[in-house]
Image (tube, rainbow, N blue to C red):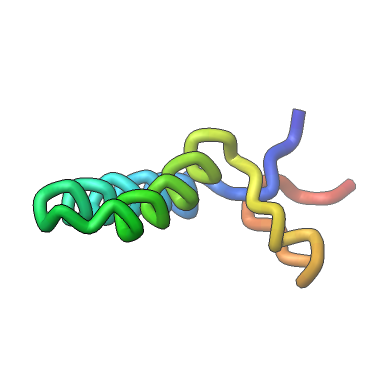
Length: 63
């Protein structure tokens, strides 16, 4: 299976998501924590729903 988010892209998304969730929970702002869940989920799944719209693919090469 081919994901549209590459390894570096996924790592950045997971780290950013965890950072936003941590900051949101620490500051008591659940909206920021909820927004942080988006990059976390897309990083773990390896699929970004906006990439096909803009024809971006950092995950695998097309044959």
